[in-house]
Amino acid sequence: QVQLVESGGGLVQAGGSLRLSCEASSASGLTLSINDMGWYRQAPGKQRELLAGITREGRTYYADSVKGRFTISRDNAENTVYLQMNSLKTEDTAIYLCNARQAFSGLYWGQGIQVTVSS
Image (cartoon, rainbow, N blue to C red; front, side, top):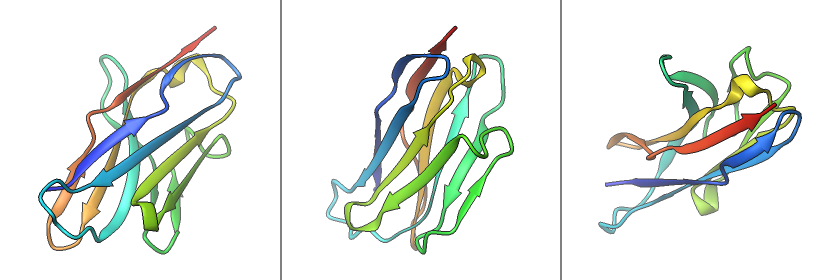
């Protein structure tokens, strides 16, 4: 099993920045071989939205809603993915979740972390 733990969320004013982290680990001694990693968010009453993804080789994808404001990156040695969020807007308020695809195992999700942007 792969466990994902997000950190770095919180309350920020509009126009501010936050950096989210998501670290993958295995409590069962499984050797991690993480392929794609990604960030999603879910606001109350809305569907889960893909924000950004990154392959193991570093190729990235961004949703139009965050392109130019958010940057995804990863540290393969630390099995960690980051989301740098700049120029935050009140509509960015949501629970942010990361996921990771473990080779030959499947897709795993973190529990999510709250990001609140105040006006």
